[in-house]
Image 1 (cartoon, rainbow, N blue to C red):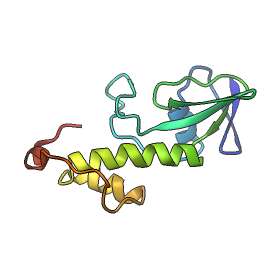
Image 2 (image 1 turned 45 degrees about the vertical axis):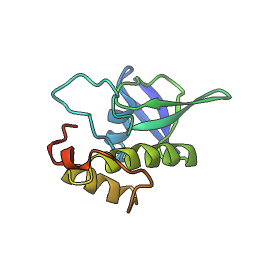
Image 3 (image 1 turned 60 degrees about the vertical axis):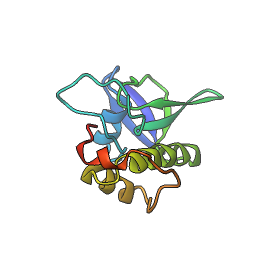
Image 4 (image 1 turned 120 degrees about the vertical axis):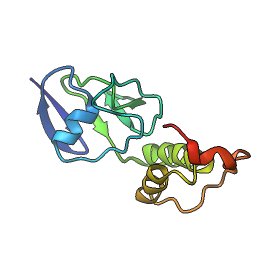
Length: 129
């Protein structure tokens, strides 16, 4: 077992548990679009990005496939993370505005209208996430 700090909450989990699963177990929501229990995580949508801090270093990683380690500090909702998620979600929403799950996630993240415009909106109804 290892202890990690997620948003100020001490969380004890098995080593190599992903940040996403550790956060979920602690009742902390991290948005995802491509994650599924049926598939091996590969972080393609990047929506589950979080900020990981080790010592004085900070970096952005995808929580669905990043394993926890002893002493890790994770920020799931820092200003940097919120900015990254907003851009990612706006790009998805511009591309697939008619896809219900994309619309729901955009609203959950506080996005009304994306600042980007897709030239292929006619194809948006058949989107595959």
